[in-house]
Length: 395
Ligand code: GDP
Image (tube, rainbow, N blue to C red; front, side, top):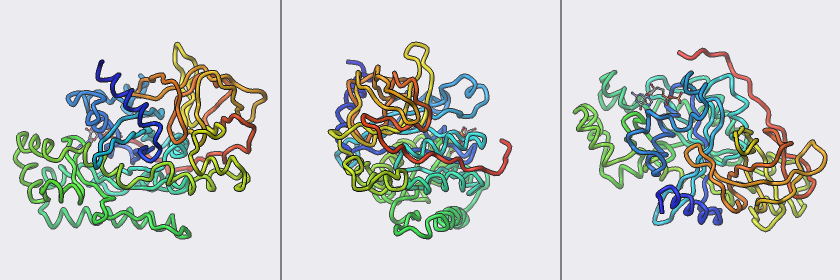
């Protein structure tokens, strides 16, 4: 059996256990390294080869994106990652990194429970960092921070250990100020910290990363990093080998982002105004795969063979071929033609997708991004508001 087939089978096996699922997005100010990091994770999970990571930009699926070098559409990919002897299914939604597509970022946030916010160590938090954080927090999505391009502090800016540490602390401080301001009236503290492992550092370009737990595990500290980064290609290869970025980031995802069972009870009341006492509400809170189907499409893409593909989050029930589902705002039902998951930007058909997952569904011809799709008529999800952003031109 091919490697890809094996990964698909493993994903299918893991889909049934919501506790081991993490639905996440990576979001960043343009050019801070979101695409390079995403590619790294895919390579780390065996989805694309290590050599192509960074060159291929696997998540940029549209030609115009490749030409323009920016990511426009939200593409999805599922991967598996072993953390503390347990395999996890990580569904990663790509978010556009350009201001013109703010609406798409918010839509992607509806489908996920955790957002890894990437910030360039040299530039620090920028206006879009604030926007993506706002989008995440308003949707009840938990943030974690990855400070990228740390290699530049060492090699370009020639910073010493203290200077570098201060700069990283400043970035964390700024991001926490933003988070605090946006969660004032919430009863949870979602600020990030090095100590609890919700902050990672590294270089997506040179494929190494560290966090407090990883440093404790590998014994690699900032002194080693500075020395190895400065010693050229060989040192960098050693860093990549001893503390690979994808491991550190995916461990962080598994450890700190909520699984659907933890996330949905909190998220449902913020995104759905239906009767909280109803069976439907209960089934969404419990991520009940035997409940009615409740799916929210967050993206529609076109496939030359399959037609429209509605991608989104399945909050309740199990979605499979042949079901007749209601689409909010339209009359009658649509028949599901196929269900699948995304692998490295390609859709893989599977027999069924249970609650808590990101699914790619064909046959929902009336669905648009933002539609509520369900096996019974229901109050639709809250519409996804676009957050307007300051106008920034790509440098
Ligand atoms: P995105 O717009 O956030 O998706 O950013 P990209 O991943 O496309 O990266 C923007 C630019 O920064 C590219 O030229 C990358 O090669 C570069 N880059 C990304 N990560 C790093 C890093 O860790 N270190 C350095 N020096 N450059 C990086």
